[in-house]
Length: 367
Ligand code: GN1
Ligand code: MG
Image (cartoon, rainbow, N blue to C red; front, side, top):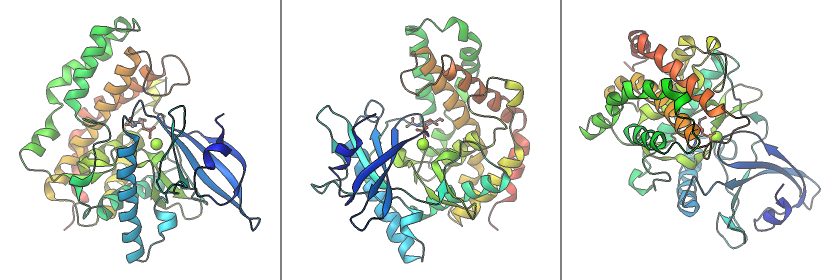
């Protein structure tokens, strides 16, 4: 356990450190929910996060993005009668006026207000929750539709460049540092069979047929806080990958995460299947949240986004498995390969049910 009291002392928290709990969500950063007692005797919670600087090579630039984006969201929410303290993240400043603390040993920490009365879920509790989460991510796109996209740093270059992810897999296969490539032959072949289809969204972008947006790029269910009472998706969190992107990335990654009948790392593939009911809820929720901001071309691209984001995530899990699990946190050996297999099973089903998926999205076109 890191010395959280000491880390907290570098931030303007204005209270005495009491205790903390590890937050078990996400595969990358490390989070701790910590209680502090204010001079008035009140208990308040904050979220202390250690930024994984192996994944994010410039925590400073990442925090520049986060500061600008949260300021924009808060201003918009204030102007439209929302509650910026619950519907957006609030960064706590360091004592020297920044938003990032670097420890002597080279760790990077940030602090945000803990949003009470809301939770993050790994697996959806039902169609209503999926729709709320979709709506929250759609609203995120709408709220940031007037944010100057060129101001954002690319916190992870080529993050959703799917052909680049295929190349990275090929490198990992060649290196085979963990000696696992032979046993993953079927998965590697699955990717090679589809390698030629991975530039579909990038081609549309280059042809000027899709607008570049400010997107979240990691829209899994546990990255939206769901209000414990109303069940509404109130706040989008985990803003580390907010970057220039495509609406199809956000919609697609949400599908990958929420239209799965099983967990991301389910070992019994018979339990993994594409949940078209959840897909429909996402299409409905996302378009409700995005309001009229999606162009007809973007709506056309959503089904492609679902397939490509699922394929890409599976490729990344497979690459990390071959690299010896250096990127995604694992709890057991083979977990990244299991994660890869669930993604590929979903891709396979998306390919055979593409026509249905297109028809579903069509129902939610604005008229
Ligand atoms: C990671 O950090 P977390 O768990 O929200 C990853 C996403 C993957 C996701 C798969 C920065 O997200 O891209 O889709 O795992 N984030 C990063 O569950 O690589
Ligand atoms: Mg997360």
